[in-house]
Amino acid sequence: MTQPPFKLPRWIIAALAIATLTACSAVRLAYNNAPELLHVYLDNQFDFTDAQSEIVKAELRNLQAWHRSKELPEIQKLLQKSQQLLQKNQSPQAICALFDDVRPRIEAVTNRALPALTQVA
Image 1 (cartoon, rainbow, N blue to C red):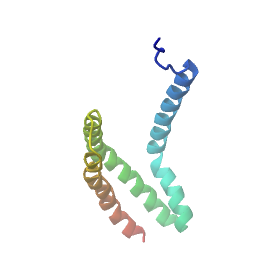
Image 2: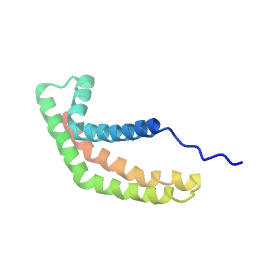
Image 3: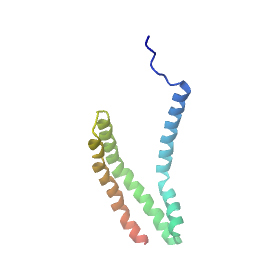
Image 4: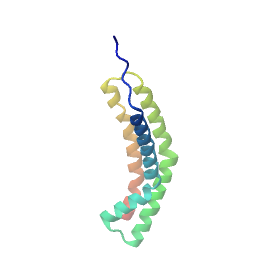
C-alpha cells in the first residue's frame, strides 16, 4: 500500500502566502522611503548640522532617483538571469559566479554616492 503524498495544511499555505506578500510590501515600503530612513540613520551616526542635513537629504533623493532609472533595470536583468540559472541544476561554482554580476551593481551605487559623501565630509 502506498501512502498519499505529503500535503501541507491549508493554514500553513495561507500563512506562507501572507508572509510572502508582507515581505514584498515591506521591501517596497523600505525602498520607497530609503532616503528618509538613511538620513535618520546617518544623522544619528554623524550629527549633521542643518546645512549638512539638507545636502544629505537632497543627495539621497538624487541617489534614489538615479538608482530607479539606471540600476533597477540592470538589477531586473540580473534577477532574470538568476532565475534562469536556478531553474537548471547548477554547480555551486555557477551560482557563486553570479556575484561577478552583482559586484558592478554595488560598485555603481558606491561610485555614484562618493561625490556626495565627500561634499558633506
